[in-house]
Amino acid sequence: MKIALCTCEGRVERKDLEKIENAIIFDTLCCEDLESKFDIIGCSHPSLRNAGKILIDLNNLVFLRQKDSAEKAKIILKAYSQLLSVEPYFMEAEVDNSLLVKTDDHNFASMLSKHFEPLYVLTDNRSISDIALAIEGKLESISGSIGEFEVRLNGIDMRTGKRISNIRVSQILIPGINDPREGIFSSELEAVEAIYNRGGVLKVKSLEYRDEMCGVSYNGIGGCKLCRCPHGLIQHRESVVVDEISCPGCGLCSALCPSDALSFRIFPRNVVLRMIQTMAEYRKRKTLLYVCRNAVTKVYGSGKTESFFPVILPCINSLSEVEVLLPLVSGFSGVCILPCDCPHGDFEGIKRAAEIAEAFGIERIAVEKDFHPELIERMNRLKPISSDFKLGSSRKREQLLEIIAFLKQHFEPATYRLSFDNFGMLNVSDSCTLCKTCQSVCPMNAIDRRDGRLEFIHGLCINCDLCRIFCPENSITIESCLNLAEADSRKVLKELKMIKCPRCQRKHISENEYRKISALTGQKTVTLYCDSCKPVIVFEGIYREVKGEENEQDK
Image (cartoon, rainbow, N blue to C red; front, side, top):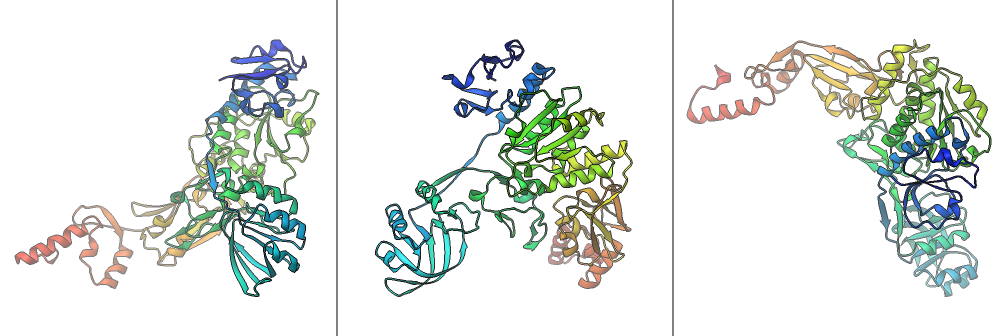
């Protein structure tokens, strides 16, 4: 790993920087003509943007003017080296030269006509019909994405008088429109960007979606709706549909997804967790600082401050409960969160993490608009909860249950029941026959039928409602909540006597279910056999019937 560090013209002691392995030291790094590509550059000056894979401004973030500066810098660089494993994946949208614009300005339309063909203009100015397809009327709706927008209109072609109700265009420019999709512009100033987009748009893919892990539907029946987009770019159908080319990469949908079906590719969650574990190697008092990349300048300063370790994120919205709670059980005294002033601040994962921590009497999570060194100092006076906790699972919901179980070992909750809509508490009535339908449709494996018992792990339930919808006996009810007392435990919801398969002796059906199925089908004997043995018995019966022998089930 190649590292470039800078003394900033002597502001930082060279002897401290020389303690860092694999580092080449400069006095004015931003003025250098760097010939080789570095893995990490300890400066974020714009001139260095193409000189390294990762830029982190160690000097301006005051790390190298703190106590133990060299040790902290080593840990910071080691933590950020985790990002070197993240390979960007690019996606492209084809964009032709078609454009729909709303304007009455003939000169503006004339300028656009030099770059776009066909050019559709919503206007009341008839003179524009000489240079473009001028449409008098109103816009009704826009569907699709950049390169393939379908626009519904109630309009008239000013030149021919023909009615126009539908057009297809690659890009749209409507002053004042509130639509976050790529290729839809709300200001005439953005016409330059529309011109630049001609020929195609290339963007980094922000999300990865794995439908086999998703609980949004089962056989076309709607279930989980927990993920959402502050920009309206997510739809819940038989799978989650994301307008990926328009996604600005805030990561909220992945933070809200309890099953890891949606994962954030720009700054993966597993990388954040490894960074926390690396930063926890500093064994003295410290605070973890999550900071939005657009707010990082708020942390710049020339003075000293108490020890904090930064994780600079594309957006604070990408934090789930796990990333916020893990530092508290991994040796940090507190977690400070510094968002930018973006309009899509939701922070639901942070809010739920704070509620869980407060239920255990832990008030060490702070969301601040500005960086306050005195807050870091106050947090660092607190003794860490633990420094030995290690995650055992790789999935988000299981990790959260591990943290809750650990907290329960050390703290008595002031309240056990939290009003969370992403957890469900199941109850089963006497009509349950242990038919396994609920187990089959559960996307989280929260329900398990074994040895005549229906078992339930409350903390795994995402309250998708699929088990209740598909239950043939209507025996399931669900309460939306997180019960800390039962979150990580396996609870028996129902227990019934099971019947053995006469052929393989495996217990496979409850007495209640046997009575119901045999009464409905009239097949009392065949119903006794399990699904594996039943085809064999049927085949053997046909064979004996052909041979004129007595069937086994008739003996």
